[in-house]
Length: 216
Ligand code: ADP
Ligand code: ZN
Image 1: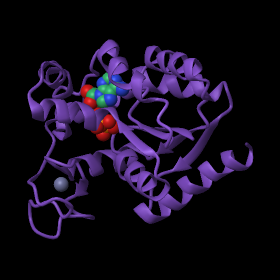
Image 2: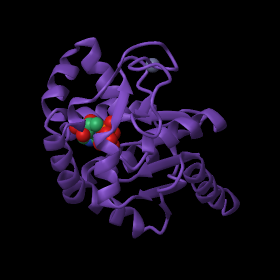
Image 3: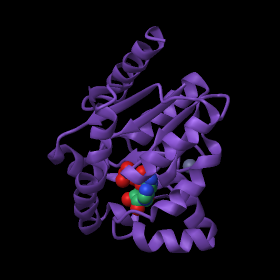
Image 4: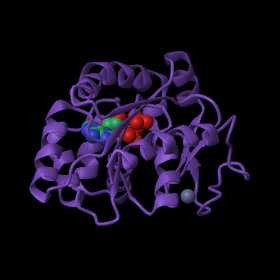
């Protein structure tokens, strides 16, 4: 299966994608995680990406497409999280999938109202190493500042600071909302309201994806 998870920053794509990957064996492809790994490793791409990410701007399409296009035919199936984020990326994805003869099975749009998003992002933290996401209020690490999963340091992302958050919301509306419409025209978008507990959202997500399977 090839699933695209879409939704604004803070919608919970990363949290749900990790769970879904774990329960289905599908490969979780998060461009945000990949870029943060490049930043942490101090690569040339990482250095370039950081200058965009810290402001809440998108990293140029060509870099993102190069990072993803070789990975789309993973036999385990793929779960795209944070990609495509622009029309150019969506077209590149179509092209890459067409080459290998594999369609997108479902696009799942996770919606959350803006007030809730801002609240979530202002309390968000992430493991510096394995990138497990936390919420400092509703889902804090059991030991302050230490990742439950790998024991590394849990930090606040630079792009979760208020100014960057505002810009990310704006960029999402401008560049990514049109991608949703691009997929809606094809009729393979499932809408889920991504509020409530992570368990209840996971339930809705699983249902949204099963619908596709029964439809072939
Ligand atoms: P979120 O969905 O919470 O905003 P991500 O971890 O998916 O966060 O992405 C963090 C940042 O990485 C984005 O704000 C952007 O700068 C960059 N990024 C991630 N994916 C893409 C992409 N597909 N195209 C351009 N930039 C991206
Ligand atoms: Zn960790």
